[in-house]
Length: 120
Image 1 (cartoon, one colour):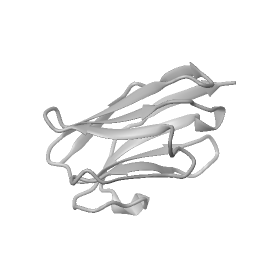
Image 2 (tube, one colour):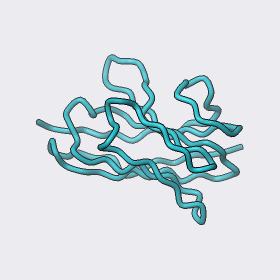
Image 3 (cartoon, one colour):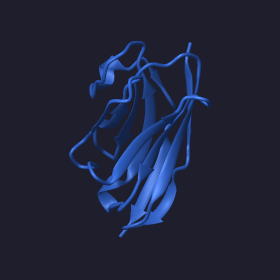
């Protein structure tokens, strides 16, 4: 069983930066970040495979970076040039297998989420 604990959310002004962390217990393969804005469906943000391949949603490409510290089994999401539309609850997720995916149903484990609020 894998447990995921996110941290690092908060309130930031537009144009600012935040770094989210996701500490994982247990073996993980591909790791992803998703977000959910109020009244909207949860959406894909970024994925990092165990082989180091990354994929980003078009809306965050060039502004967000997903990375991983294998020594501590922690995944990060570095966010720059934040916009009000980036506001939402950010969730870390883990797959039971290799390969990248942007589909929620392909992820077996989820964290509790961390709130990110970007003010204009």
